[in-house]
Each structure stands twice: as C-alpha cells, then as structure tokens.
Image 1 (cartoon, rainbow, N blue to C red):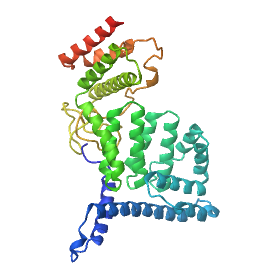
Image 2 (cartoon, rainbow, N blue to C red; image 1 turned 180 degrees about the horizontal axis):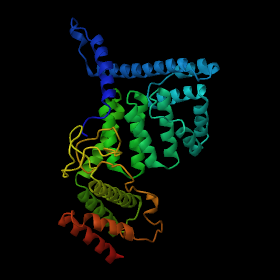
Image 3 (cartoon, one colour; image 1 turned 180 degrees about the vertical axis):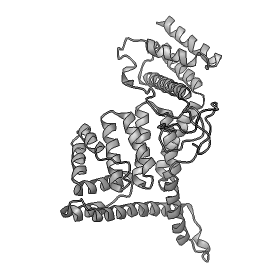
Image 4 (cartoon, rainbow, N blue to C red; image 1 turned 60 degrees about the vertical axis):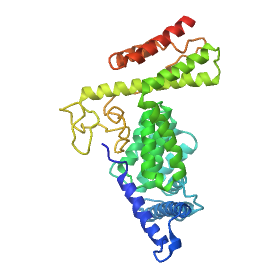
Length: 390
C-alpha cells in the first residue's frame, strides 16, 4: 500500500492550518505576506490550538463518563489544563494522568507503571483494551499498554500495540504522533533500522508540518539509513573494510568497536528481512502495489491482503515507496530477531570477524544466489584476511 500514513490526521492539519492562515493574511494589506517568521508563528499557534482542542475533547469525555469517580472529575480536569507545554509527549502524559484520576481500573495500571512494575501494568491494561472502543480513554489504555510492553522487553508486541493504536485511532492526534515515534524507536532497539527509517519518514509526512524542528531531526536520521540500505551489501563491504583497516593498525578502540557493532546489526537486519521476504513469498502474502486488491509483485496468484496479514512494518501505516517490495512485515508467526544481545559472544578474545556458525549458515543460504559476485568476493577475501592475521 503506497497511500500516505494517517490520511485523517493530515486532513485534520489542513483543516486547522488553512483557515488560520487565511485569517492572518489580509489581501488589502501588502505587508501581510506569509514570511518564514509568520509561517513559523502560524504553525506554532496551530499546534497549540490542536492540542488544546484535544484537551477540550478529553474534558468532555471525562464529564460525560458514567463510570468515572464523580469526586475526582474536577481535579482531573484541572490537571488536564494546568500549564500545558503543547508538545506531543506532554499532552499524552497529562491526558493519561487525568484519566488515572477518574477511572479506577486505569488508575491501578498507571500506578503500577509509575512504580516500575511494567509487567503488572501490561497485564492490567491488556484486560481493559477493546478494539471497538476508540475513545480517548481507549487511546490512553492502548498507548500505556504499548509502553509497558516495551519496558518489559516485549519489543515486537510493543510495536504491534503502538501501530494498532495508530490504525484504529489516527484522529487521537497526540497519541498517534507519539505511537509512531515510539514504534520507530523500538524498531531501532531491535536493530531493525529499515523499518525504523520507514516510520520516521511516515511521522514527518503526517506530523512534521506542526513540528518542523523534530521533523528535521527525524528526516536526517531516516535519510542516512535510506542511503545505507540503497546498496546494503556495498555499505557492509565499506564498513568491514574500515574496521579491517583499523584492526590492521592495531586500533581496537571505541571507533573500531562502533564499526564492528554497525556491521553485526546491519547483518542481523538484512538476514531478518530476507527471511521475512522468503516466508512472505511462500505464503502468498507479499506486499502489493497500488491500493485495494492489487496483485502481489512477482506473484500472479497472491492477493493484496491475506487474511490476518499485515501490509507493512505497521498495520495501517504507509511507508516510503523505495524498497517497499521487500521491506514489509508479514502476518503470522514470521521469524523475528530474538535475543539480539546474545548473537555475539562477549568473550573479548573472540575474533569479531568470525560470525557464529548459525549466522554464517543463514548468510550463505540467503545470499548465495542473489549476492553480486563482486560483493561475494570482497566479503570472502575479508574473512580470509582476518583469519590469516589471526
């Protein structure tokens, strides 16, 4: 699916910003042109107004909630409006805190998370989540559930919870923005940098208009990863060569170790994507081009959306078109990286260039047919040199 992420969210920005811009510009006044400074002010005011609207909507939801603690409603609404900073994270946190004051079951989970008992918080929140509920309270429950999963190390489940929130409740603007960002950060911790890059670009597309500073940082990070993955084997060969040169000069310092770590993490990511692509092709659930019921690329009989399958790194989220044919997650129990910290031995005497036997087998099986001959020779020569020096 090539449609941009969160169409409703983007439309909401347009509905909000365009009328505000029209009010600022006076056709009869030649000095009312939209300068960069005025545009920056406009966007800042639009962001603040959008977040204020959310707080107003939450206040209405709290006042009309039949099951909320009536003695806590005024206190919760007061906390909702107390000195807002009008950024995504602040809005999410104050909304969650307000609901924790009036909803007993959510309060238990909120307190458990505040104490660091994320496993208990996740257990409590999971029982409260309903796919049919799209209220702000439902968004708060889903977001806190995803945060709790991430804190317990259940990274894949956390990503799924974040993206479920975005797919079901894109109009819960602050929650959607933070969920996409947290999902991308979680992918980075999993060493799935391509998926993280896709979500960073999706965040910029959907929310960057109202937060240019954050958008610039995320776009720069995404473009760096995109450049490396445009020719991944070439990037790997370059990083290996840099590490080899440093080791040849007996330089095993921090910079060398960073290069080694980057090689291992990129190998992990490429192997995982190749495994996912292989399973996707075998099950007829590959990513499809176009919208709706398009045919899978390279598979005449594969339908655009298999039952129970996800169409990309985040269900319901569009990703950049570059490399989209092989970079999407698939449904079912597809193999995912587990225990990444254990892939490399911690023995300092170990030769970093000699991958564990299982990783060597996966690389050979994955790239034996598809790897360009020049890269295959470069990597083979690299390992031979490392073995000889050893």
